[in-house]
Length: 261
Image (cartoon, rainbow, N blue to C red; front, side, top):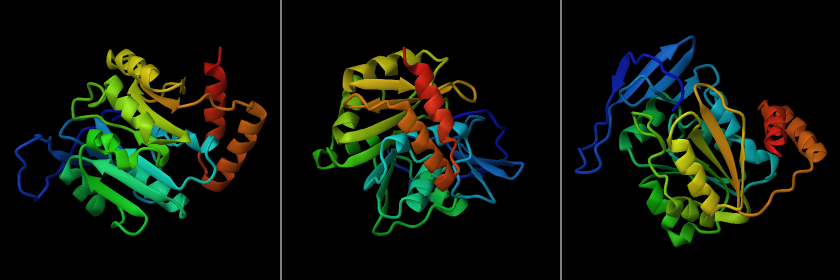
């Protein structure tokens, strides 16, 4: 959920209609070699550069990977809200030793990611689950299993995350391993920001906000324990991340440093 772009193509699920919940139409647009995912509105829910299908095209999606500064070799990464599968694909390709789980309630989004956004089929490492994100995080079998949890849960109207209660974020916290990190996409200039930030303060020990990008997106890093903030070490780690993945990790460290009092 980012910038506005006019939708020019419509793709709807061929699956039987579900009694609940009701889903908005899944639509597409393309401009300058980038394909965008929409939910029937101009709000962008994800993007893919056609020549680089596994690259997280949008800056906020790149920031969602800032947990890489604190976790070197994850074994299980989860994404709540599939979007255009940018984060799921990147994690799957970049961490061949890791289990990657994506949770998406709308079956049409899963279908369109396979057909139009080059999402691979499930295998022994990749699992895309059609289910409610709240059910996933409340499932005790998922507690204490995740190194990284990426949360990006917006509907067609972009009025704020669909799940935003203290109880939801507490369940997200419970899914992390002791050293685990959650990254959350919020809208900084929207009333939902304060509500979500307060709920996250209830659930996590430490929050760090990266600088706002696009039309108000603020990515929050959430920790169950205070992170080590040795900035010389973090800049060294950022250089390694940049070399290995091309992600702009130094800017993440700059943002973390700016957040500190």
